[in-house]
Image (cartoon, rainbow, N blue to C red):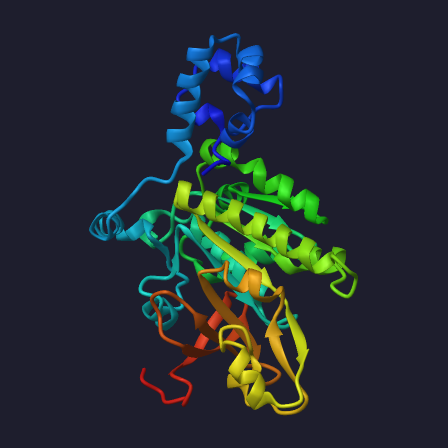
Length: 357
């Protein structure tokens, strides 16, 4: 909440402009200054600065809520509380689809369909609400140069052929997806910090970062002293900003992650230390001296609210797993990647693999 822009807390525009000239842009910037510094910058009296401090503190402080109030607020408009993936059984398990106001992570090995899923969700977010979309814009932060406009158009044409039947509709859809290529941790963080006004002006409903792990793993060698702490601090800062944007603007936030191999002499012992939400090996049936896990460690794992794991079954078939969710049970669905994007082939619930479709 401290990242909220001063232009959104009810201050006069001329005062915001004056503060902006001193690089005072957010509530945090303002509250970190002494009353004397604020008096010099604003031209206000001591009493006037005190009133500003009170106003800004109230505006950025989290408000108390009751459980009943939260339930009533969320049940008021269920159509905007989720973005349906159009993978019917997955949406049913998730109680509507990918939830707004929280962080959803999609992790898995290279080539299993993470970027395809993100592009598919980008198309869905631009659709009219009567078709299950959000009728909004998308901000897509690409850190791996993996985004393909041609593939995006192809998914739209094949998945919703009756709707995207003209060049004008395809052009309108693609113009609502705003792509940023950020290749360093600092660039990604700066982009996230600058998104607030763009989200408002462009009517953004979906924010995607593909991928979070790419820049982090390139810049932080965890074998070097101090790097693990710096990486954890960066990830905590990034997660905090993303959670603020998700909650403040009721955004759908989707983040992709990579996998890593964790050495372990005894996978059974490792199972006691690692949650199935992190470790692909625990339910995948692999054996040996190592286990395959979602990258970025515990700091990041605890930051995401929903985790979907994509994994290979064979050369053609793959599985999508609901490994972590505040609403859904552990669930597994088979899928293939077609011209229309991800297409479900089967549905399995529970680690025992019993089909309950």
